[in-house]
Figure 1: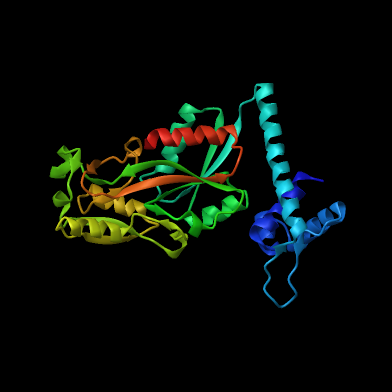
Figure 2: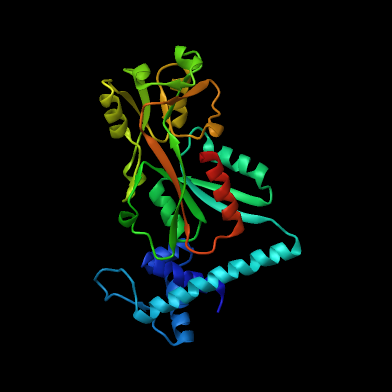
Length: 313
């Protein structure tokens, strides 16, 4: 039985849909159906219950299918381990790793910086960074188009996230609130500032879209920022900027037209014309997590986790 056929069956089980699996493979829906029928015929076991025509099109696993899927997942993991072991024994260390990150998770330009810095530490790993909204990244991870997803959250509810049985959520580290402002700003002489120093100054904030929202993941958004200001008897002044034009936000900050809030680790604050300072009394921290497969992790992913954690901590 071909490994790609096994992966197709796993895609149907993950997405609970033949049509969605067809998009992720990619191939036609009829091809997905034929692959599933072939596996069921070969094993002599019915894996999926197909809904009657005209009703909900969600596909469900049979009791036998639940056991078969677990065994198939082990086969895919063993297949991956086989090639990793072969690479090590042959002296070839060209590992591949694909990581998803929110488009503006660690501004400015952090996905590129992460990739470049990681290469210096681990030149044997070919790292690709995919940027998108969080919900799309999680979907890509669940269809095995990327190996893991890195994302920030001020608060996390794992139960509300509805993680699947084969998924693991690992804490990476925490970063306090900092702000970026023009190097010509009088505050540029300071490495730390207080909320009172920022009272009334315009905060340049990107507008979040519905695609950015995932159940159980709560960002350090404008409401928490406003609450922190009010607790110190200060007023938060915000300027909304569409989330897909980050360059405008940073150019306004460089030109002295506002302040950029950030939870970016200081090693990745490399935007010319901006000075960053820690907000020492904000009480707003942001934690970073990585969503990956449960159980054995490939060596490239373990290296990446250690690399990110060292920057955050």
